Length: 374
Image (cartoon, rainbow, N blue to C red):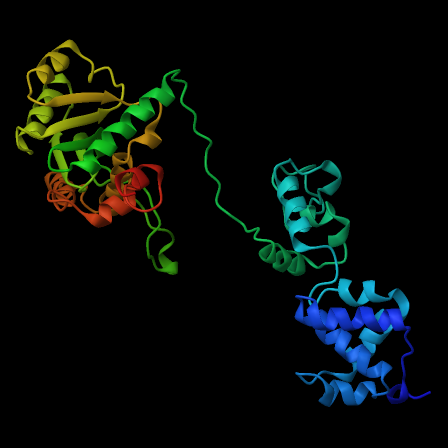
C-alpha cells in the first residue's frame, strides 16, 4: 500500500488515552503527536495532516515517524522521544567524563608520541591522547575532537602555580586583612587600608618581546658601556582609591622604611586610621622600625602570612611597572633618566586610579574586590 494511503487502527482504550494526552499533556510536542495520530485513525491521510491538519505545517516524514513510534512501542514511543536534537549520550554526561579524566595524568596507553620521538608518555594531554581515552571519540578527527571539546566547555588554558603558604596562621591573618578592608570600605573617610611592598630594578634592561624587523634578527636588551646598578622602591597602595605613595633610594633599610612610614602618615589626615599591610621581611620588624611606627598616630601594622605574595596586590603594580618601563628600555646610558621615568610612572597614581585597582584585582570579581565593593 502506498505511503499516502497508510491507516491506523486503534482500540477504544488507546483512543481515550490519545485523547487525554492531546487535551491535557503539558508538553506541546506530545499534544501535537496525539492529535495527528487520532486524525490518522479517523481516516485522514498522513500527508494531508502534515501539511494542513496541524497548527504548524510539518514534513510528511515527521508524521510517518510518529506513526512508526506508535506502532512499534505504543504510547511510550510517542511521549518518550526527544523533540529533535542530539540522540546519543547527553552532553552533560560526556562533559563529566572528560572533566574527571583531565584531573588524572594521561594513561600510558593513551599516549601517541611522534615517530622516533624519545618521549614515551607525555605529562599533559594532547588531542590525540585525549581521543584515545574515550571510545566514543575513536571515529573523530583531531579537528573534530577540538570542536567537540569546545561544545563541552573544555579549552586550552594557561595554567598557574598552586602557591601555598606554610604559615600555620594563614587563615587567621587573611581574615584580619579582610576585616581591615571591610572597615576601609565601610568608612573610607576614617579608615584606610594600604598594601606596602618593595621592588628592585636595574640599570641594564630585561629582555622582552618587541616589534622588530625580520632582517635584523631578534630585539636585544642592550647594556651599553656601563656597569649594572640596582635601585630600590618602597611603595604603598590604597586598597580603596588606588592612591600610590612611594620612596626611592639606592638601598631600602630600616631608616628608609621609617621615613616611608612617616611619609605615608603625612599623606593622610592625622584623624584617619591607617591599616598598613606588610610582609614579613625582617627589616619591617626591626626594633627601630617598630619603635618609630608606635609613635605615629592611628598607625597600625598588619602582617601578611609568610610566603603569600598573592595576598599583596601591589605586587601587580610592580609587574606593570616592569612591563611598561623596565623591559627592554633604552636608557642604560642615562641612569638618572631611567629612575625619573619610574618615578613618573608611579606619580600618575598619586591621586588614585580606577584602572590601577582593576589591574591589581581590587575591583572586579576577586576576593578582596568583593569585600571592598560588595
